[in-house]
Image (cartoon, rainbow, N blue to C red; front, side, top):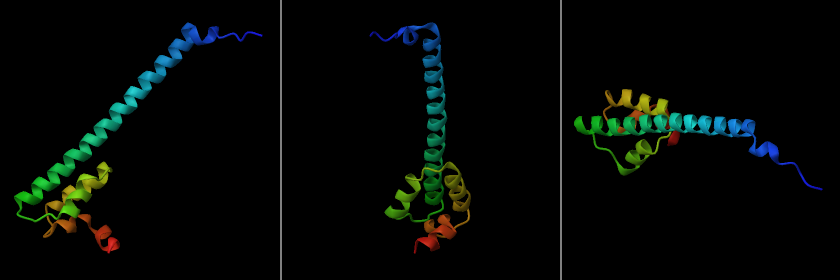
Length: 98
């Protein structure tokens, strides 16, 4: 018994696949922009701390550059303006890590 596969080559199935490809590309662009913002904020944090003469340990630098949350990176950037040590940008989470 032969299976009818004509749907998979029909204009409707092509339209459905194209919509999926478009949606996938849009989601990828959105994710890429968020990652770019997060990376940019990490760079800005390090630049700001350096400009203020604040030493950054390798562990702190790694934590900053591997952050995947754009909102958290934004919070760290705002804190970087006022802190006396690089580790203080992590706020309450730094004391929770200890």
